[in-house]
Image (cartoon, rainbow, N blue to C red; front, side, top):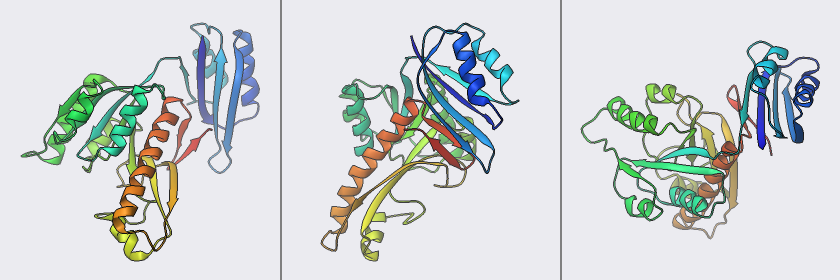
Length: 276
């Protein structure tokens, strides 16, 4: 069996030796290892790929040799379970559905939830459950509660906002803390708000980009996971830039969810540690 061990804790002397030594005691073979120390925060992060069969007490023994408050987890070969939220734009959602169809990611899309029925034909074409939870006549908190209850019924590992154009309430964010990944249409915080590509066009930018980030209670200020860009010139219209931007968004969103599915993401304050 193959496993991925993730470890994060206060930095200390000999952590790698303690972790790898315990793996040896349990006859676990390390096939790949990545580690990082945030010297300013004095935090240690490690991702370890293993083969073998760990004993039931492996994690408890590991916590016993690590600093107090250490977060350790052992992930098997099961797929990461994802619920996607959407509104009307198809590109990020369609990209993820196609990736799953091609079995290109270690992800299982359990359901898609939207506040409009627009994308139902797309989702049903991939044989994925589709739910409409309309926001009409509801407060933001009421709508988020209904959506949250539906998400909770699926018990996903990750919630992906596939161009979900609703501002989430603090209650919703807290309910799914560190599980929500959003895609934004710029290098944050540039060009926030309506018609971002028109804003970029008016400013004569030379690159456009997209940012995937975890969601917190500060609008579009959560820990950044991944960013990418596409070059533009004076000859590109706002409409051309919007099409190019959608391609970047789709790529960045799918890569961010792929990183999550491979347990390569660690939240470190308002930043992330992302192993390759």
